[in-house]
Length: 274
Image 1: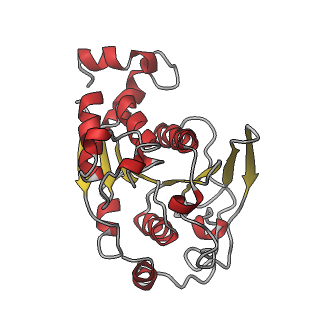
Image 2: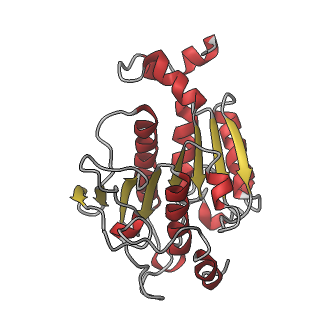
């Protein structure tokens, strides 16, 4: 049940007929795992906490640095040098003390991914490397957890939702990250943020949209982004939606899957520096 302080805090959501008291209690009971407390994870974490998500898990092995603060708004100058997980948790506590946090100041790896992800109702991936993205995707499929995925570039970003463990209306599997991006790009073809740069507010736009999609998935609101990739071009001030489907040749949930656990990720993470 919501206590009087929570009713006052969330009253702008409570008056929404799509949410109301029942929906707000469902958000309070929800457990969301955020992978990465960086540029995407920051607005995502803040808006999930403000919305009243009951428990937010945060996994990130990094510490706050001064050059993070241009876009990673869950942290501040006094947090420089602190683990990002602890910095984010402190901000959540100041914003909404009704939200519980569970911190994982470590990397997500094949040995811990399933145990961590199974403890949550939904996962939001804001990681910044392809090895982690494929790992999160595969682990969410095996754990049967929905995944909201987001990524950004210097002046652009994209967002979608995966429920690859579930069938579509025709009985075929829904697509996974591997249907959309079958293989990671060749080494050196995608410059990291430290080289390419980024307008901080672009991460804010995409991270905020990810928070909206998490709430929609938890409450069953509106039209899901499953099978649809939302593209944002900041310089053109344009959003575009592109449909995509299940790839029957993909190795995870294709017709003849080759991946039945997470062991194939050990080499990829080792090559990425894990």
